Length: 289
Image 1 (spheres, rainbow, N blue to C red):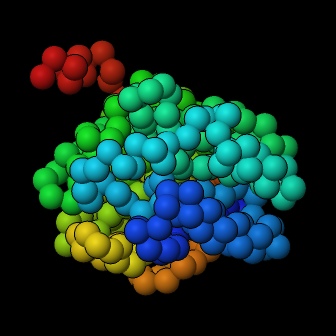
Image 2: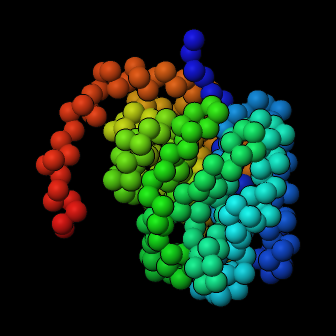
């Protein structure tokens, strides 16, 4: 019997002025996303992922200690606990990207993974942290991840997470595949003119090289007062052959859904034997350079 899983991605504009209190910012963005999650529930979505740090704006456009106070504990913070309740109500796996506090002054760009019965399965911490000049000051906010590349065995599929800048590095994508990922979600915040030409190139390449599905999410709109550029949406799913199976618009809030046939993974791997033919014993130089 085919293993078909209905998956969803949420792309959205920041919900309110960045001059509001941090509590108002978080509550406004959560309220917006809860409405779309309810839509996903009505449409029968089984696995859902939101965009990078979905509870706020992309504050890495500036360097301000103000945003340190927007961190939350995982799994004991309010957003993770809320999403556990929502996941259980809809029998939906939810990937929840938020700004995590491990301890005072120790903060990560993280995604919690919650199973369809509301169980917290674990988290992925963004491993590759950019510091790309004006507009992308991530090292000011995030410590590099220290949890490796875990794969979460949910009720519907084995799920991996890669976050935004991670997508430029094929090594972690390969490890996710070797660890058994069937679907890899990449919640992102990226603007036009910076890496848009790579948006539909790199992640389908990861899908092909590793024969898994990819769900890539990008927020939409302009975020004041920083004006670092347009978050251009175009969230999408691609299959293990690198083909796009669903794609979002450029400029509006949207739930993107696709029915993913997980049996395709076996079909593709039986044709393209990349895992059989790889030569890890010859790659030692990668870790020496």
